[in-house]
Length: 308
Ligand code: 3HC
Image (tube, rainbow, N blue to C red; front, side, top):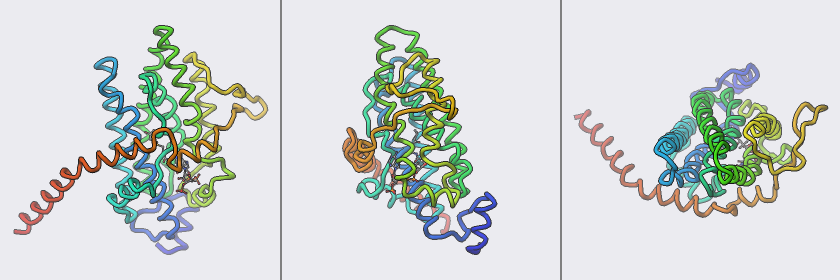
C-alpha cells in the first residue's frame, strides 16, 4: 500500500491491515493506545480479584471468576493486536512495570465492599462499553476485530453488575446503603475513564483523523451519562452530583465535570492504589517467570524434534 492508498483507505472507512504501509505516527499511536488498553485489562483484574475469596455465595464466586478471567483474555487479545504492529509483548510489559506506560486511571481506586463488584460491573464496564463499541469500527483491522469480542463480553460484565445491584437494592437497608456508598465513590472516577476534556486531549484530533477513535472524549462521556442516569433511577440510587439534571434544550443531561486535578495525579502515579497495583503486577510477572521459561523450552524442544 502506498501513502496515497493509505489515505484512500482511511477516507473510505476501510481497514488497514498489518502488512499495509502506514505512517509511523499511526503505528505509534496504535501501539500506545492498544498497550494502554491491554495493561488496563490486566491490572483491572485486581480490584475485583480481591473479592474472589470473599464472594457471598458459590454463584457469585463463579460469576466473578468468569468475569476476571475474561479480563485476562481481553489483555491477551490486545497484546496480540499490538504485536501485529511490531511491538513486543515482553517489552510492553516491561514499560508498564517501569511506569513508562499508562493504564486506566479507574483501577487505582480500591474496591471496599461487595457492592463495589456490582458498581464496577455497572459503571466501569458500562463506561468501557460506551468507549469501546465505537472502537469496533476502528481503522486498524486487528484492533477492531479484537474489540468486537471484547465488547460482547463487557456487555455480560455490565449486566452481571447491574443484576447484583438489583438484588442488593431489594435486600436490607444496610445492603442499600452499601450500594449507595459504592455509587458515591465510583461515579467520578468512571467519568474520568473517558480521558481529559477535548480541549486538553493532545491525541484526539489526529486519532480521529486516522479513524482510530470515532468520537471525542467529551462526546462519549456525555453518552455515558445519558445512558446511565435512567438506569440509576430504575435501581433507586442517587448520583453524587447536585447539578445533574435533564436539559431539554440540549436533549441530554447537564452534569458537573470530575476533578481534573485528581485525574492528573492518578495518571501520574499518585492515586490511592497505584503503588499496590504495580507491586502486585510485578509480583505476578516474577511468579510466572518459570511458566514462560518452561513454555519457551518446550517450544524449542518441539521445534528441534520436528527438524530431526
Ligand atoms: N487513564 C489513564 N490515562 C489516560 C486516561 C485514563 N482514563 N485517559 C487518557 N489518558 C492518557 C492518554 O493515554 C494520554 O497519555 P499519553 O499521551 O501520555 O500516552 C493522555 O492521557 C492524554 O489523553 P488523550 O485523550 O489525548 O488520549 P487518547 O486519545 O489516547 O484517549 C482514551 C484516551 C479515551 C482512554 C483512549 O486511549 C481509548 O479510547 N483507549 C481505548 C480504551 C481503553 O484503553 N480503555 C481502558 C479502560 S479499561 C477497560 O476497558 C477494562 C474493562 O474491563 C473495564
